[in-house]
Length: 102
Length: 454
Image 1 (cartoon, rainbow over the protein chains, first blue to last red):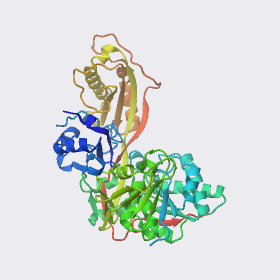
Image 2 (image 1 turned 180 degrees about the vertical axis):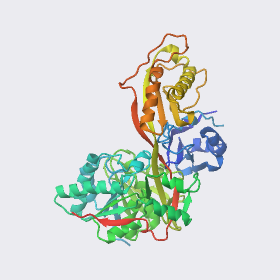
Image 3 (image 1 turned 45 degrees about the vertical axis):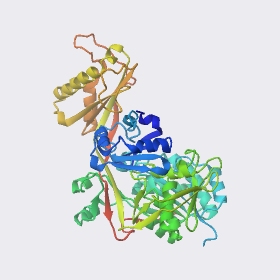
Image 4 (image 1 turned 30 degrees about the vertical axis):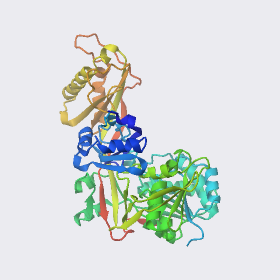
């Protein structure tokens, strides 16, 4: 089972405003994108589990022309709370690198 | 049919990031109707809104305006700048205006400068809340009067209307308070009759300047509006705006890649087409714009808690082989000492111990089989209700944090600390408290326009 980091040329995360995070999975091409789309391991529930947020708020988009999957969800706490460790959310993508895709 | 396209030059994604005079001169020679860019963002955190301070230095703003103001003036085209002073407070507008006027004077010109303010009087926000005109955006709860009171500054994000109004009143330069990143670019095209779907779509793509090109750090872009499409071209000849790089920018810092909500409507790009005109220019069409009841997003931030931090470095393998145990014991010991030595309760302060090189970024527990790192940096972050108290806590923690043994019977170690004095007063903790929109039937009702007097 290939890992997401092998299927993608780039994976990134960033705040989308102070209350949301958005993660973009840039697949190498249509082959890898379609392979992922057949049985996507990153469901709303899985994202909620990894990022400690509510599944009902997770939004997942398939951007076919760009071979991109976009995943957005509310930050567990708004940007800049007293225990902030990643102000931009720029390192939040890392737990997804080893996700296995069937 | 237009004889000439309406063209907007976007010199940079953020005023003060560094503008190249030759880029601007070349762009203006190619024919443009306005220069527009944004000077702010929430990206860098709530401190800039809470304190109304600029993230960018005055010198950097002056550098960029020293190129833009004389260039726009000589070309006889307007210069529009949104979200002045990073957060777009009234103070940010006035600060930027002060720089702009000094630049104008130094160049011997007197352009008409409009200041557009969108900071809100909290008492009016309280009233609007009572009138049920303020609505929460997910994931936030309904707004409360307490949340309004916890904000030091509240701004409303302007759409295109205040900019069009200022242009109609003769402004050469518009220095706007908080504005959507797109509105400052879309304003003049919409005023000139460009279809709103094209204006907003182009503005979204161009809002970060060259970020929609193959070399994101290489200058800005020009968007040109034709009857049913627009083009995106890089400002610098070596750069390229391809269908791939242009369409991919819709993903950037956007929670939804297809829909963008703006004051007065929503842009939908799900059926947009991106085609190469040549190697470096991309043509775009096919998006739609649907008018909606006029709403403006509110941003508000405040402070209240204060932090003091201390940093140590550890390279002793004995500690590095037992980091989880070390961290747990150290934290427990420090908390206990603060409670007994100062007489605080656990609710009066927070200690956050972050082991850089181990798990400081994720904050997650590290699995047991992970090999020890070569070094870690341990950052102790102390948060309480005042700077003085946080520093007092730091001073109380100091000897233990710097010499904490793995076992009580061990000889006292000394960890590597880089600074003296060891504690660093980091300042206030600033937070965003508003994630809400306000309904307004009149788009100009939440903004104020005044012209600068030389």
